[in-house]
Length: 151
Image (cartoon, rainbow, N blue to C red):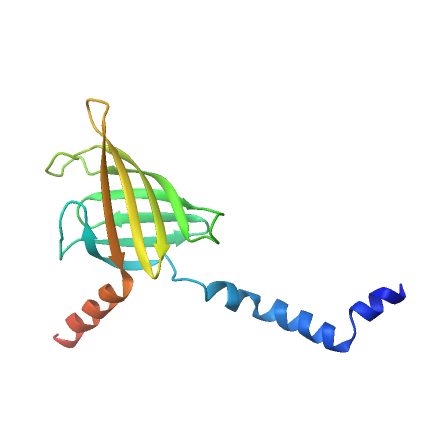
């Protein structure tokens, strides 16, 4: 019993309480939130100034919508402190192009404040096509501010 009192002396107790109070801020400071608009910076399929994704969060579930005609539902991973998510999605049926109506697996991660997307599209012949892209949230926010400034 006496050792418990020594372990939680006044300075230790204050440090323990401070750690509990500040933990959410410290944990959140380690990375960028998935939620919001992300502007494509680069892609294996070529650059696209109008390509962007919007991510909405509902608990550990993320709904990811691509402006170029696809959507996915992912689940935040426990590895990496919640900086990655994996799930499934589908390209729009009414879209044009080789991915029209195709299902895919998707993994998104945040690395150095950029969103990295790896999509594996299942084709009719059983093969898979990889689609990889990197997005920047700051670029998207900046372009949104510029659009508002010109209105």
